[in-house]
Length: 84
Image 1: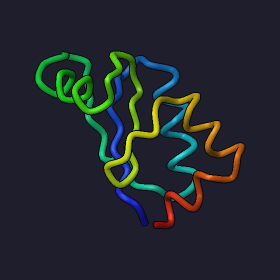
Image 2: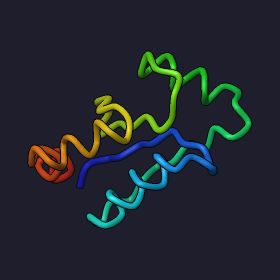
Image 3: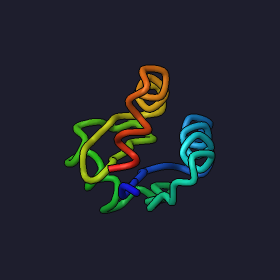
């Protein structure tokens, strides 16, 4: 199974939706909580070019946020990425 990383915040409903989709597929998520900001937030911005959460990476490839993840699912492209 692919390595999945997610930058998130505890109170973010989009983060919860993305985690629910991934966990429903049996994916273990390496989650980086940004509630306190700090160096992990700067890392996320550097890696993704975005300032909003969630930001999701599959095997080091930035796939975007919650809407992007659900688009991959609708297009049938998420499962092959996770199986890699």
